[in-house]
Each structure stands twice: as C-alpha cells, then as structure tokens.
Length: 149
Image 1: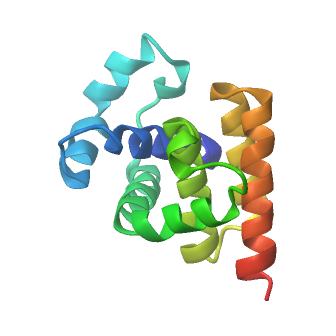
Image 2 (image 1 turned 135 degrees about the horizontal axis):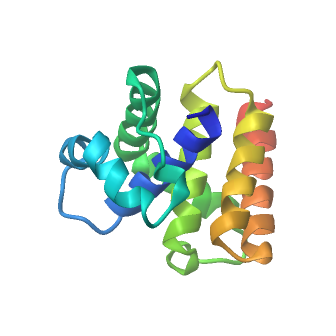
C-alpha cells in the first residue's frame, strides 16, 4: 500500500465519522483489520491489501487528527469556500479537504503541493469535475493565505 492509498482510506474513514455514532477509536479498531479489508476488497480494489503497521499508523494519525481538529478544519473550509455555505459542501468533499488540511497544518513531512494534489486526485474519483476544482481552489487559497505568510 502506498501513501496515496492510505490517504484515500483516511478520507473514507473521515467521511464515515460524519455519520456514525462510533468513536474514532472504535471505528479505527473495526476498520483497520485484515478481515475488514478482505470484506471491503470485494467492493473496492482500494482495500485489496490490508495496511502494515506503518501504514495503519499513518491512517490512524490522519483520521484521529481530522477528528480532533474537525472544528478548526471546518472553519478553514467555510472561510475559503466563497459563495458556498458549509452545509452545501458534499460530505465526501469536506472529508477530503479535512485530510489535506490536516496534513498541511500538522504533518511537516508532507509537502503542501503533494497534499493538495492528492486531495484533488481523490476528489476526481468520487466527485464531479467542478467539485474537484472547488477543492483545489479552497486548498490553494488556504495555503496562500494561512501557510505562506
């Protein structure tokens, strides 16, 4: 499993946190098992290989970080989504942006450009081309205004 696959799985889990009653720890314990991956692999080749310890740690760090900083990340999304109310943003799109913003803010070993590019690539897989452009615009503005100062 490569990092972009782990990032996409983290986006899936962050999305799932939007509508589950489970805690982040319960969700991760349930989803990051070889059995869960084997079951999901039938539906999505993304889950063909269960993560090793290093990959599971990366996914866990992202998902827990997104959960812990959700209010902060959502505030940035709302701030830079000009002309859109936060409630109008698809849950998948907001999960993708949360993961990228968390990487940009809290994972110094991840280049900002890589986080943005990966977010856009994931968005292209699950959202419309317009939404992928929207995500690119929000993340670009976020980096220019909040990070590059």
